[in-house]
Image (cartoon, rainbow, N blue to C red; front, side, top):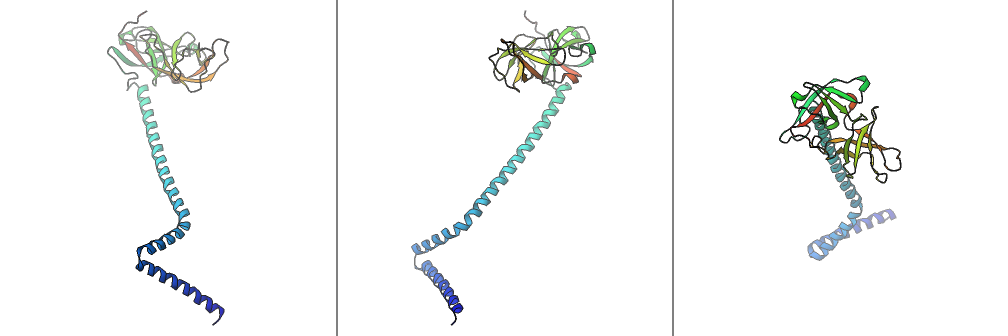
Length: 262
C-alpha cells in the first residue's frame, strides 16, 4: 500500500474512532455525553463568537436607526405644528396670553409706519372704543414688540422696542438678573444696567419683569445676542428680538379693565 493510501486510511480510522466514541458516550451515560457536547460547543464557539457579536451589533444599530427616524419624524411634526400655531397667533386666531377675568387680547392691523419714525412707532386700527389703553403691551408671534403710548377712539400709537424712548424692565430667565431693554432708533435693541461682574451667554432668553399691572410679567421679549463694551460699572448686551420688527403687519394688544396703580 502506498503512503498516500496509508494516510487516507489513517484519516478514515480517526474519524471512525471519533464517531464510535461519541456514540458510546451518548449511550453509555450522561456525564460523558455532557463532556463531549461541552467540548464540541467550546470548539464551535470560537468561529461563532465574531459572527454573533456582529449580528448583535447589526440588530442594535437597526434599532437605533429606527428610533432616530421616529424622533426625526416627531421633531418635524412638532416643528410644523409650531409654525401653524405661530401663524394663527399672528393672524389673531389664538390668544397670546391666558385670559383672566377682565383681560382680553385684541388683534390690530398696522395702519401707518412713517419712514421718519420707522424704528420708533406704528399706528394701529384699534383704539379706546375697542378697550385699548395707554401702557398696554403689543405683541407679535407671542413676543413683545412695544407698548401703547397714545390712544384715540378708533386708532392708537404703539412705541416699538427699537425706540430710544421706551424702557422696558426685563428679567433674564436663566439667571433671574434684572435689566432694562431699550432701542437706538436704528433697529438695534440693547439690554442695560446689568452689573459688570454678571456675565450672560448668547441665547439666554428675556421676558418682562413684574413692575406694572398693565405690563404683565413673563411676556417673551427676545434673546441675548452678544456682549458689548462696558463702562466700568454696567455691562450692556445686544438683544435679538423674538419678533421681526421689519415685517410688522399685525399686532396683538393685551388689555385689562383694571386701572394701573401709580
